[in-house]
Length: 132
Image 1 (cartoon, one colour):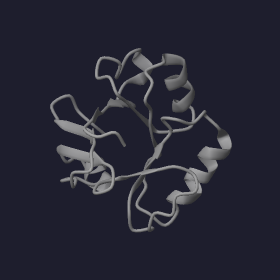
Image 2: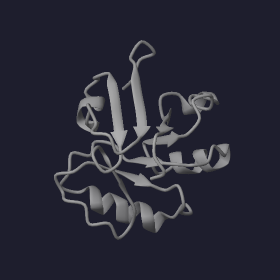
Image 3: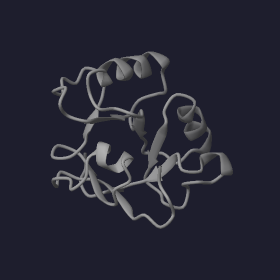
Image 4: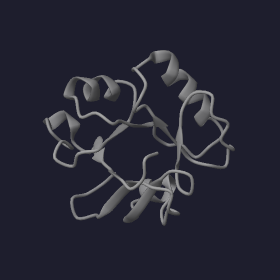
């Protein structure tokens, strides 16, 4: 999906996003904002309109197969080619566990992505502009 020459910046921010998940998966470079005016951060119980893109905000939740199945159900009817989870931790064991369910995991540290080797192109970093 991503090459080392592409510049994709992922922010947790209420600023409108110049990219969508659809455009990112099509290979566009730029800034993808996650928040109220970008790709929505979803948790179980949220009622986000089906025309909006969502990423599972798993920052304050334990890993659960039930939550993953609920997220998959929430993705139905949306352009959701991949399942993505947003973490607050950089715990390698938690990342490995999440990668068993999710196609991509977003972490708040750009030094951890793609390490170890099995994380290549599946662990991406984000910056947080707000306290979302």
